Image (cartoon, rainbow over all chains, first blue to last red; front, side, top):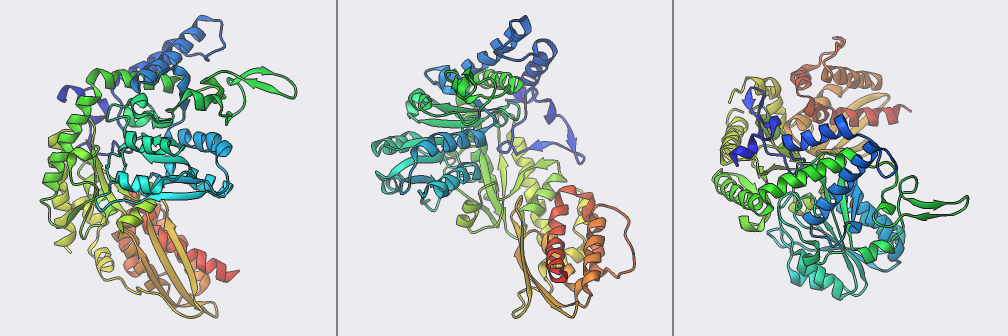
Length: 407
Length: 145
């Protein structure tokens, strides 16, 4: 993995007089040179609008843009590129489902089921939909270790449930949820399942057909791609019956004075000139991830989490949230250090060149469940090493000493 | 770890206010109540002010947050007690200038508040320091209208 690290030019710098240790990939990952080069090359040589030009650049741009869609299809094993819709990111992906499928299919008294560990982006769209339709928003209870049992899932989903929306990997607890089993239970009750894969897609293999999920969203920027591009996967049969959310150029077939018809899938959901460079950049990121191998990335992160947990647990007064078993977690650790508020901790670590996240991680209901107002989070990716964790642990010990002993 | 830079931020007087906050709690009757939070980080403050005849007679705060936000709240309640409403607003303005690293009038004795000057060198933490002052400003402005 040392060779991989060298492909991330940003990591080769000093911050506040110390070599940068970047432990905030769950917020956004860094981008390898390979991806940056592809974006640069697109603007240098091929930049043009897609799907309209007869000219050569237009064709090149369209080929690259649609070529990236095929890479994404393969990456999650969707059956057709008709099921791959470009979005701005996971938030837009989920909002598209809530506004499209949700508005059309949810009525008063219906149930929408989510969990306490949802990021605001997989919580508020459903909250709003429930309020608008008079539907009931229900939550899967969490076990003490931040997991959801299938008994809970069976007890919560009923025949009134129309939508189950859940994260594949929690951005706070690190919990990996049993999506395939939850999907099966949802389907037994006639509900659809919407999966937030923002923290999963960068780190573990995903097969949407094997999982049998109806919708799945993820963001390019957390998986070595650029910001502003993401994906909504949806089953073709459902997407065909779903009305577009945004109207305008790019998404129309025939436009008359008082009526219009839409393009076929997936373009009916892609109104306006899309983020062409973003899509192509995401395609390059998928090439990069596939060359390394998602299994290998997942294994590397499990090793790092295991090592980090064992080292961090040696620090007195340090609490780690979420599953105790490293194999049941994705590559992040959320924690608190007694006597040091997470913001203060983040500042102390930053002065040592270490970038971590502090705050509520866009999961306020989960913070309430944990009975804390804020937490600190270190998150890992394929470019992180055991040495990074050693630096973190040393920084944590010093922060503790600084706050508890000096004053 | 070099702690020199950190010492600029975490002056001992700040840590003293953090560990032993002044005016902690809530005023009971006839007080102006302001609840404010910092949605990006989760810090929150519950501020109560007793205002009579255009003067801030008493102030108490409660809340959750980092050392900077809580010590700033503690110091703020100390400095505005006994001040006229317009003086309290002027102090909020002075504090905001201090955070931006701008010049400000020296007509008030800011006491311990001066210790927060170092925060201006840590842009990510300015919002922590200003939370209590923004709450106070809101409460006093409402009362002035």
